[in-house]
Amino acid sequence: MRYLTIALSKGRLTDYSIEMFEAIGIDCSELKSSSRKLIMSDEKNKIKFFLVKPADVPTYVEYGAADMGIVGKDTLLEEGRNLYEVLNLGFAACRMVLAGPAELAGKLDSLKDKRVATKYPRIAREYFEHKRRESIEVIKLHGSVELAPLIGLAEVIVDIVESGRTLKENGLVVLDEIAEISARLIVNRVSMKMESERINKIISSLRKQLEKGVVSK
Amino acid sequence: MPKWKIYTPEGVQDILFEDCFLKRDLEYKLRNLFRSSGFYEIETPTLEFYDTFSADGDLTPQETMFKFFDPQGRILVLRPDATIPVARVAATKLKDVEYPLKVSYIGNTFRYNELGGGRQKEFTQAGIEILGVNTAEADAEVIATAAAAMKAVGIENFQIDIGQVDFFKGIMEQTGLSDEDTEQMRVLIDKKDFIGIEELVEKYNISADLKNLILDLPRLFGPVGIIDSVEKRTDNARSIAALQNLRKVLQILDDYELSEYISIDLGMVQSLNYYTGIVFRGFTYGVGFPVISGGRYDNLVEKFGKRCSATGFSMGVNLLMIALEKQKIEVKKPGVQTLVCYDKDSRKIAFKLCEELRNQGMSVEMDVSGKNLEEIKKYAKNRKTGGIMFVRNGGEIELYDVNTGKTTVTSIEELENK
Image 1 (cartoon, rainbow over the protein chains, first blue to last red):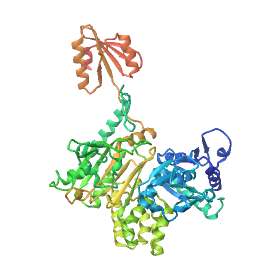
Image 2 (image 1 turned 135 degrees about the horizontal axis):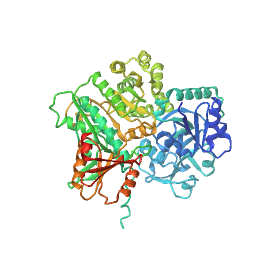
Image 3 (image 1 turned 90 degrees about the vertical axis):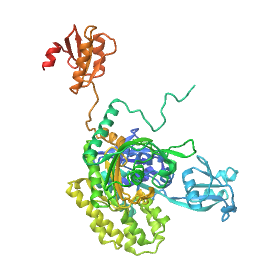
Image 4 (image 1 turned 30 degrees about the vertical axis):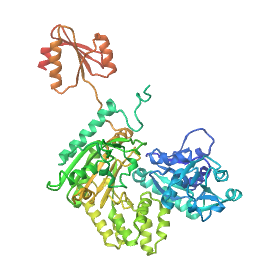
């Protein structure tokens, strides 16, 4: 039997992902050990795992280097890869929003030139292009995006919000909701067909686990 | 200093020796298959007007095309697709031919965004089109030829998924989705984005049965039996006609004895403006993308001035090469069988010998290096040449087997008698 290869996001999604797979009887002990091996396997089920940066997961899956992957919806939207998004795993939930100073609420259209600071240039562009039908200037940042409107680097930001505390403490408000974010199970388009039996089994087992609410969120 | 002179742009490649040999071999096999199946090959220009391709915005978005200007200021492109030029030719130069018109092509196409996982910006496509008939037989013939093409290049492990875009269009009509929402729904279903589909469907006030059918669309793939169960849940004429058309094509393919390679995907809804009926994709191990893509496009030729139904497929030759390599399928390798060298009195005889061997179909290299015999032996060994024929003393021949290192001596006469 051929190995099924699964790409997992390194970081806050890792533990949840392991928990999910263990709940459906996939052996993740090698994954949990602190070894320096880059590729871990479950020999019984013929499954290989590897951990990569979240933004790389869709790339591995699109090119077929991995058959499946677990990654956040934010990364999926930003990478815009050609693959199947088959299951909302529910964990790591947050929102992608447009935010800015409170005085801009309801008056966004009055701004002539919009500079948008974000870690997600593609999401920001698509949102303004499709939903607001406006041209914008995107300023790509790598962190502390909330700072940008405070010191005049940008008028608004597009970013992920969990509790909204950081926004509030800095006098920023949510101006519009862009998308609900959570971890998703993704599958390569060819693998879905060539290995449909095994992959569908994994999908339906995971779905059952989600319905039972076994996995913590 | 010209900084880039030793590099090639990203997304194009030099294809050398064994790869080139393999590629030509695949093209040869595909060409033979197309010819022996009654298709006539055409070659359209690499360079075309932008307008030819801009008619179909969603199939070839403008940002995917390599563009230039001609001296009159018109926009030219490197062709991003091989089917659209066929449609142009069919509606213009071939508008008065008798149908069905069966056309094949093998040529390079160019796209800006094609990169990674084996895709290149310059890539070779081979394909066929059947124009002027709208029959299930034509669709089945195209799919059967696609399957034969996979087998011809040596790939036995493959799957062809067949869908029918009218099934989706019928359901969208029934639901009353706006054009914009229909396109969004198409993208969501194509990505199997269940969550997005549910959100979009919630906006419309429709029956629970219809809603569940839409939610299930991305899951409607697998064995042929799916059609029967879906038909019971469908109650609009367009979708039912689509399923019946699909069933008819499958019955024909069954007589082609191809059923083992075929499965169904009713959630396959690529480019609705382009495809009008049967659509299909071919997959194999080792490549993350479909290697075959095809279907019926009855509205395309009309855009060039003549109503004409059409169906066809194209396959990516470079992707096939990757699949063969990843699946470790044995392929033919290039190589020289014999290297001929001579002493100064035997040149004329050596040339004659060379010509004769070549006429017999052998690949024979004439030594031009000016090296001595020992050096030539070393060269032949490194090149994996089969053997050396050293013509000396006006007709004597020393045969050297590169593999065994054995030497035998014979003469022209003896060789000719063999």
